[in-house]
Length: 72
Image (cartoon, rainbow, N blue to C red; front, side, top):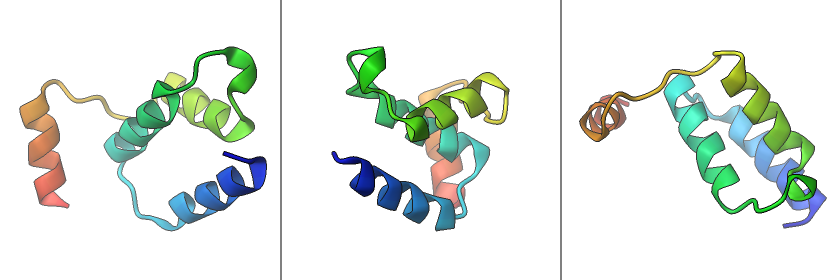
């Protein structure tokens, strides 16, 4: 994915009303396919930093995740 495409995706994501849990989930999905640190772009690094700073909520179980998703 090119930098322009990633920036466009990031701008779109910022327009969504994502909960802290959803942001963490999304950040994890974006990182799944990253294989080297050099391939991690600034947007991904920002999401990782937010997660490290505790700006997200973790799920305790898959049932907890599903319950939260149905509440949206």
